[in-house]
Length: 452
Image 1 (cartoon, one colour):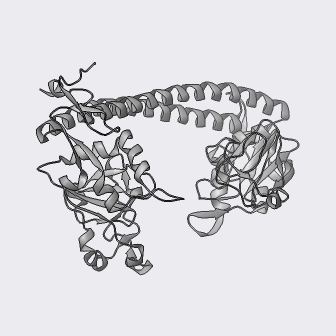
Image 2 (cartoon, rainbow, N blue to C red):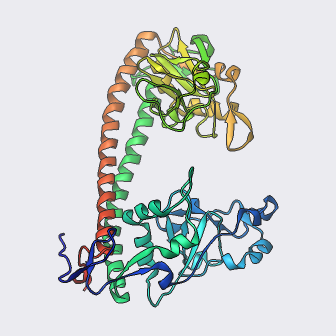
Image 3 (spheres, helix red, strand yellow):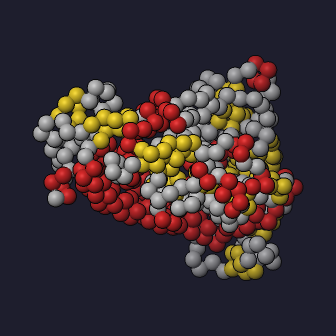
């Protein structure tokens, strides 16, 4: 569908907006709101104020897709929430991120009334006679406005906004009735786009399930559907092909090396620089060398150890419960990239590293990791090398391992290409939706007839 522009326009006087419809106005947000205030200072909240199943406190992490996603964990005691009554959210209020991912914004619905605006958020009480809440939310969260927020924000390590900055933010405003029409138009069109995105996301989920099932069957049962199986005698493994061998991973480990903890920059190393890997280099289930930090200081450069070597397995020994033990296969030497102290580089003899890598994608492996990892915090777990070495697995002969690897490389690459294709469709749909919103709320297209 194509849309025409408005018949009469004027210069807005602001480079952000360019020309706008002649009957629209540019006004500071303070002129169309009743209240703009940041959440309570951190000094007003103490560990003893938090309980489970109390009054939710809304910080940026609780604002997703234009909606409030409150957590029932780490909520406020009712007595404390009463003390913070001036930060209480009312129906129709907007609550937005004032630090970090600027542009996150949600409108308070009936289910969220009474929640408390968090320290990292800002409460915006709209004048409904001048500004429709949903129109404001779409405008505030638009790509164009996110760029403006970054321009006016402060902070050396994290972008921050204060109430004054937000109050001075200029809004491009059509008459209220036209705001309703634009909102209705965008709701309908974005809903159609969201439905297409959801279809692609379901396809991706199905493809990933197929990928996992294909890998699991190949590395635990082999490629022969008629192969004879027998009880392995190991609870973790169950039945395995009769000619496979149940053993501990230590029986096929040639070496395990760990890196060193060094001070590094928060950006990745250039081609000729030295970098140290982050634990996230294997978080996605494959090895991503771009997940590294540049080492710049001469003293630190002298401390790096364990360069990345081809045909090895990189294993994360310390992370969240879902990520500890995650692994990736290294295809080539990387002489300028080194391991951190939280990563192991494992090399094998009597087993193919790539076969072991595929096996680390199975529930057999993940279940053993979950049973072995320990930690004082539920959010950070550690895997001891002695436990890792005692993980049970079943191995076919080397030539069969090679055949399974060849099969999985071919099959998973085809699945990955389909996933990438669907992901590209999702990106294109999101970009189109964002562009449509920006065009509509800045008066570049006239959508009034589309909702007439």
